[in-house]
Length: 131
Image (cartoon, rainbow, N blue to C red; front, side, top):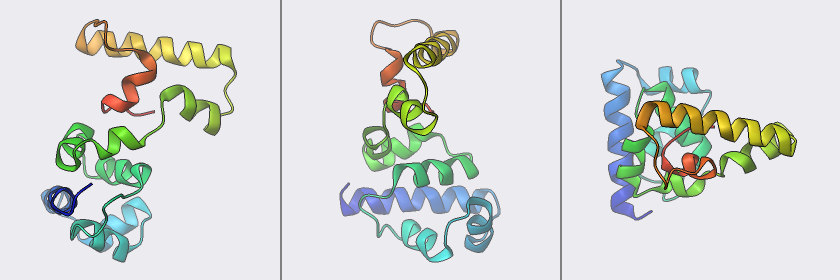
């Protein structure tokens, strides 16, 4: 991510925080992240923030992950693992469980967006979905 994109991302986070009426300290309490990390994030000092942390901040502020990706030129989407990789590593899911998870995600995605040939379950996380 460029300096300009990091600054744009920081401004988006700051706007989201202010819209929720939160101070940086309140956001730190809400997310569990250090106040100074959040302050540097808002100031655009991170060219490659941890995507999991970024997603947690976005969720706490009700910021659509798509908006995060627009501001950061797809940093979040490009940095997150596929659904299959995520559940295999964090939940130690079996191949059968992974197939079931992917099928459920595909069903939910189709229900809300309509079916498409380009919406493969293992790519949904890269399109702004969450694990």
